[in-house]
Image 1 (spheres, one colour):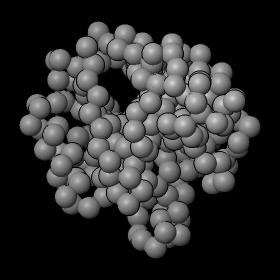
Image 2 (image 1 turned 90 degrees about the horizontal axis):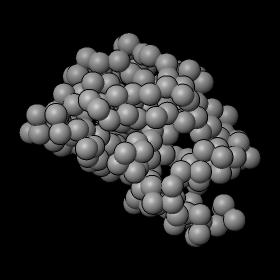
Image 3 (image 1 turned 120 degrees about the horizontal axis):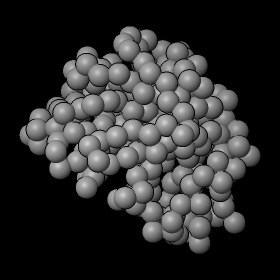
Image 4 (image 1 turned 180 degrees about the horizontal axis):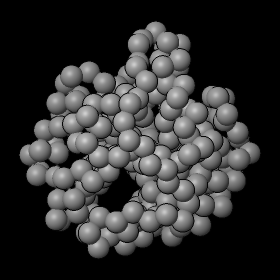
Amino acid sequence: MLHVKSFAFNPFSENTYVIYNDEKEAFLIDPGNMPEAETETLYNFIKTNGLSIKNILLTHAHIDHILGLQWAYDTFDVPILIHSNEMEILDRASFTAKNYGFFFPAFKGEIQHIKEGDRLNLGSETIEIFDVPGHSPGSVAFYNQNNGFVISGDALFMMSIGRTDLHKGDYEQLISSIKNKLLTLPESTKVYSGHGEPTSIGFEKEHNPFLK
């Protein structure tokens, strides 16, 4: 069985996730921890529960989702998994940070590329990867069929979708990604988004005004 723990971090209220199994193996997804207190909260949860971080996963590399990336890499010493099409966004992070009025050094560490069709394993549990570009060029979602959830990043929110006015955003591409990848999942699938509360595929099919 997989467990999902979420944290709302940084001024953007970004959702950072830890998914882990009963054997204490874990993935850290989109580490957005920024001030020391948030980093301490995340670290204490991982250590108190005796979790072993196997990889750090990125749904995408917008600045609010990577504010704690260097800390996470330095602390757990495991590769960063990201889609190759998202590398430009990661490489622009320092420039993006300046636009928001703060300094953010370029990430330094081991990066491995993932893509749709790849599967990640936590013990006997499998995480499937879906390409869901549109909010950013290399956005991906992480789906676990056995436990019925998907971590959608900033592609799909409760009654909303990701913005497409940022660098290399594409509205039509995002709508296609959501309809052809996410909405094909069982309606009972729980959706853990990059911001806000969880929702479900069935609820979004019925109520999301962008998907009518």
